[in-house]
Amino acid sequence: MAEILVYVDHVDGAVRKPTLELLTLARRLGEPVAVALGNGAADTAAVLAEHGAVKVLTADAPEFAEYLVVPKVEALQAAYEAVSPAAVLVPSSAENKEIAARLAVRIGSGIITDAVDLEAGDEGPVATQSAFAASFTTKSRVSKGTPVITVKPNSAPVEAAPAAGAVEALAVSFSEKAHGTKVTSRTAREATGRPELTEAAIVVSGGRGVNGAENFAIIEALADSLGAAVGASRAAVDAGWYPHSNQVGQTGKSVSPQLYIAAGISGAIQHRAGMQTSKTIVAINKDAEAPIFDLVDYGVVGDLFDVVPVLTQEVQARKG
Amino acid sequence: MSLRIVVCVKYVPDATGDRKFADDLTVDREDVDGLLSELDEYAVEQALQIAEEADDAEVTVLTVGPEDARDALRKALSMGADKAVHVDDESIHGSDVMATSLVLAKAIEKTGYDLVIAGMASTDGTMGVLPAILAERLGVPQVTLLSEVKVEGGPNGTVTGRRDGDTASEQLEASLPAVVSVTDQSGEARYPSFKGIMAAKKKPVEELELDDLDIDEDEVGLAGSWTAVDSADERPARTAGTIVKDEGEGGKQLAEYLASQKFI
Ligand SMILES: Cc1cc2nc3c(=O)[nH]c(=O)nc-3n(C[C@H](O)[C@H](O)[C@H](O)COP(=O)(O)OP(=O)(O)OC[C@H]3O[C@@H](n4cnc5c(N)ncnc54)[C@H](O)[C@@H]3O)c2cc1C
Ligand SMILES: Nc1ncnc2c1ncn2[C@@H]1O[C@H](COP(=O)(O)O)[C@@H](O)[C@H]1O
Image 1: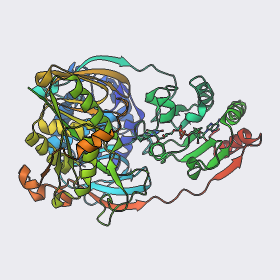
Image 2: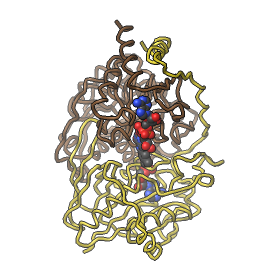
Image 3: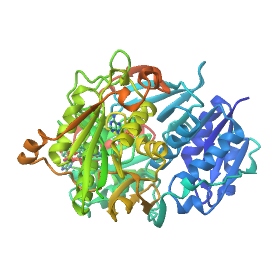
Image 4: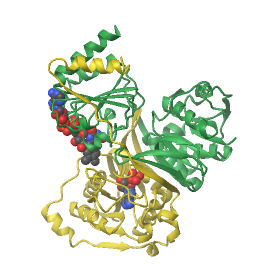
């Protein structure tokens, strides 16, 4: 059976959910072989095996943390050469897309980014993508080389599928190019204790209507009652009310949760680009004409300062 | 020596228009007005600021696109860029990112560069990978997705910047020549002044075709692309939802709905 190379996104050995989703998709195409790089790489093996990885190739070296992108490209290329896979799958994130793209150039392959679904086809994997702020759905293929495809979070269910997951050390030697861009310092983002925005099943976002940094406590309280992540529109981020890392939209994060709640957000095209594929959409906005209402499954025309606190109380009461 | 900066700018259909695919499944550029991608305005802005800081610098804006893409170059020139390069060739129509990046890389090499600056992503394709691919093709460091950027020491100097990643914020450093991309957090782009608009009309725009870049027709366009789009379908409109007006019960009604959908 063909082997499918799956690039593992992990933080010090803790595998992030989109990688497990990717294993579900990889199993549709062949036998997943995972590649985990950097600190804690070997610690990823158990969970990857549980979800279908037949092999886990690992490598650690100071280069992965000290230089940008290229060391990872070279390690992934080494894995590609060792395995000769039928496809290379990478979880979509800003950095991972860059890694995938450079690999594609090196191995002479086409690349598809931000797929939301993958199926086996006669001429290789068929990728479903959303285009133009999710107003179109396209199906594409890589027509030259070994398909390199990045897949967005929440594109497939996580499924248990126990496999061997044998750990093998991957030999990597770095070229001079790997040392081109030095990471001179790194400040980790503070943990909020909330789910990761792109991975969350529920996202509650606030916009200009929240009207102040201090008022975001109302949005956070609702999010916490639902176990949700907190998002923000660019207007709220530009005003300095909430960190840019929480921005949803074209130039922020793209999310596709089971439930998206927008409070005080008008629904501009650039915001929609990042949330329109959410399964269920709910909005609270005092303007009945706000474009966000065109998208909603359920909308409340009203003042968020009235509606949101009552909703939070109700959720808490029902969850008891 | 003068610091040579090349800014890659894309001409895209207006995102607020009714964007569609053409019959050959490429982006329809006929029915919706085009403009300089807003995200590339940030790249032009940083290029101009770097040039202003440098002793001696020259900013060239480069686009690969149809005849109308000239509009994007004019806008960048009126913001203050010194000259423009336009690669326009029938055969390029339908090129994917691999084919487009090949053309851009050749055009950048022909123009001569110490620093390439791109936007974080195009607003139509939204891949966000072209700058990384350019760095790979040109064989120079990639210093991408910067929300802050600084260049010191002229053509043989260094570029430093801040990259706000998924889990951490990183400070990066590389020596020139290099490829940089900047985000919309890098600082608002300036508006062209009246003087700038008038001056832009006299600035040189060099027109290039594939022959000028030693690229074969079959390396670009639909045939030369390494990906193929088989179908593009308009997403069915979402079924109209329930909308209620809050008359004191809005929060409760919403909770009721969420419970009915098993979210609580
Ligand atoms: C290149 C580019 C990239 C962009 N990228 C993004 C992006 O990634 N993400 C993004 O979000 N935007 C992005 N934008 C900006 C986008 O165009 C909009 O400006 C932005 O989304 C507006 O944010 P908003 O909905 O919070 O604010 P507004 O459009 O001002 O809407 C605020 C809404 O709140 C409502 N409201 C006010 N008070 C209350 C109240 N008390 N109770 C209930 N409702 C209330 C109002 O009726 C209004 O509908 C981008 C723009 C460009 C040009
Ligand atoms: N046809 C083009 N001409 C010039 N620059 C481009 C072109 N396509 C993409 N770019 C540049 O590459 C960046 C990222 O594009 P993309 O990877 O397509 O999202 C853009 O912000 C531009 O700076």
